[in-house]
Length: 234
Image 1 (cartoon, rainbow, N blue to C red):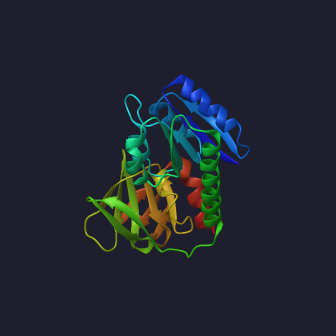
Image 2: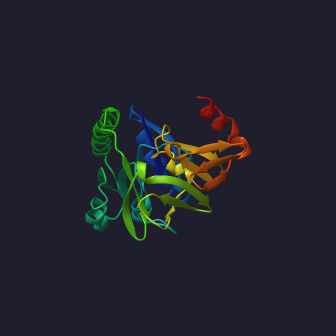
Image 3: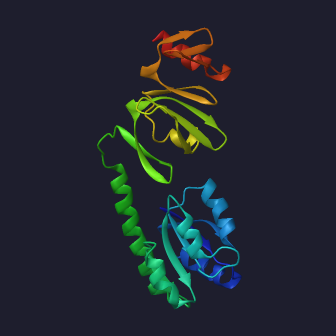
């Protein structure tokens, strides 16, 4: 089942789009949205596989919304304007439908999305080689960071400082620990505080409520003490 949302600022067009989606057995309509901002809220709380979206909408256009998405779902534009077709395909969309959309044309676009979704999910399930690095956005560049180069990390606000073996000064990255957890191997790093995470191999001592990384002492947050104690007992 493909989870989708429909976005259009015209109520009649949105109702027609919803009716067409309901006819497709492999589509599950999670939400309908009257503008791009409503869609952003849905995308933040739901995992969506496919977006049906109009282009000309107040505040934020369909093109602007799609181009702003980092983890972009499959996209089918449904619009009354033919002139944006070339620009839309630069965004690697599934299809570009011009209103009024015939049902058979709509079905063909949905089947194309189904094929791409199957290929995408199959690729995600395939085993991939283990990487010993990841990339971060810093200093207007994509910078490669090896896991073994990290000593410890400090979070503050929307940023994290990476203290590395290879550089004298920390690398400042706009991200959060929650986002980092998707990239960092859990067997190599340990969260010891709401603001600190350390490389397990860099730990030289554990004393009461502190962890030592050589001469560097970091306090262990109260909610993380049991996790640290478990590692120490092992």
